[in-house]
Image (cartoon, rainbow, N blue to C red):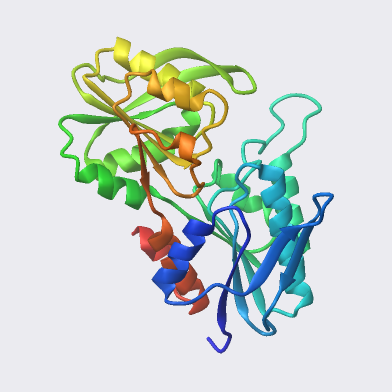
Length: 312
């Protein structure tokens, strides 16, 4: 590529961005991302980005509205500074759960955010484990969709699991669970649940055999951990001898930490797509880094190589 590679970051997840920069052997662009006294986001890029291939690393994690607004203002600043290509790198895509009209008179906020990112100036998007794959179609620009599965599989493979069974906590997670079960040569179980309201779900039925086996619950995110703990209770009742959980995005809001600590879960494996505050760093939670994965994807996009071959 004739264009210079530059990495720009906001305040959402600086440790992850710094790790990506180290893997790429480059520094972070000199930029100020701050606030006016009334809370408005202010961005100033303190170096030349004209004609550059710029990757903006900013998960829209809690506080979601603040980190999203930072991303939009950074994209606009780069567009007006004549960057050649602007890629929004979204290790976590906020508002992804609102991807359809599940009831009357509600928005499709995942589509709204896609429109905002595009209008702000992004030429392409690099995302990690979107809540629903069809969100890629909400963008009218190229989207590279990465999966943390190789990182999780490598870690689980080193644990020496005996008679493992991968459990999808709902029907929407079956594809993800099936792919991981295949790589681990594990069984597959599915929990049929019905959601009664926002952040509220009701366990209905476990499909599959977990009795006397080591169960691994696989999900894309852990928010309040309500769904996770219901799945744990169901699996425990069915006689699993060991229960672990994997969630790519550790949102961990509200009572999540207390629920995990008080549960029979042996370990909860997450990634650093969202930074954990000190109170969330409990012994049961293991954090795996996706910096290498994201760095390699950024490198491949920059030099116009295939990204999909990362998952072959």
